[in-house]
Length: 323
Ligand code: UDP
Image (cartoon, rainbow, N blue to C red; front, side, top):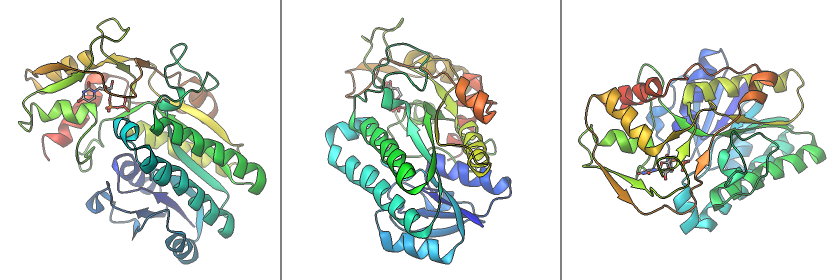
């Protein structure tokens, strides 16, 4: 018996592959390598290069391997790009989910763990955000993830595929041995971009807007370590295997840091001054996203180990200073 990890060559996916293998799971990975990296996939995982929108490759994988559950990370994830090119997101994310679930129905696979996002909430009415708070995505990325959750809900009712949707806040950090990390091309995410300054790859970091309704005017996010996310996926798999009902969980530390605070923290970790430039707001950004992780703690028994922001950045710096 094995699990299929869709998007296992990407940042969050590759960390989950390592974690599941360390827990003794047999892991099969499918990834189209559009943004993932083949060398990031653990050598003990069986790798298929392919796209989840291709029903034939899914047929082949589900026929050649005895798959018990699917862990789904294969999606486009850049908020600003989704605002400019929404159809790319509806195609890869929403249509991809349709094809994947169709293949699961066909092959009788009844469990899926899905990487959702805080972006389903849009601009929240309050923080911390609870799972049953208002959902109102303010960018196509969040909208597609919300639609994917709804597709799973109806497919669950019709075909009995149980799902866990994990709404991550801001995935951050890297595995402690620094063997894999967060690497997008082009880079769009805050922590790797900040660290490119002390790394000598860029002259400064642009802060996207300092006129938000927050204490220092810059956006606040809840940064959660990627290995803590991986633990939540493992616990979610155990929960579904134990007969647990479909459910939705926020994953965050419950603490918010502004862009400016993140830069100061990175200066402490790297021991270097990081030059900043104030730029315009970026499309689709919410001012403040902070999770309540209470539900995941209560029901899944999840407890994040990385609660200190400098420690989280240190693990990212460990990777970025080597690569
Ligand atoms: N951000 C920024 N400068 C950058 C990249 C990101 O000011 O070069 C801000 C961005 O506007 C957001 C926060 O950092 O408020 C986190 O952005 P990221 O893209 O890492 O994650 P997101 O919250 O969009 O998922």
